[in-house]
Amino acid sequence: MIENFRTGLLWNLFMGAREVRKGLSMLGFDSVPTCTDGGSQT
Image (cartoon, rainbow, N blue to C red; front, side, top):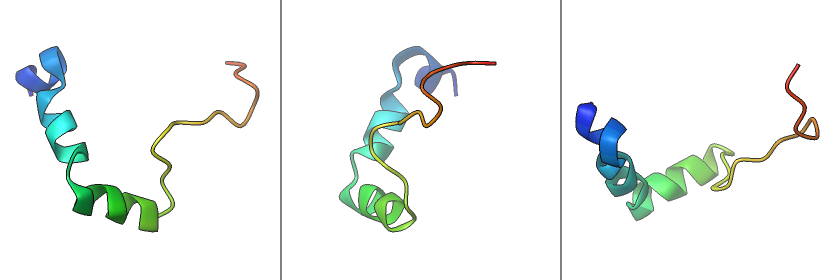
């Protein structure tokens, strides 16, 4: 956990897998986070 927090290595390796990206896409997740409320944080 510390390595992923410090460098993001594990997350980047996980998200680099074609199968993971395809599965997330099939579930409706976008690759780029979007904000639907215009960016306001209330």
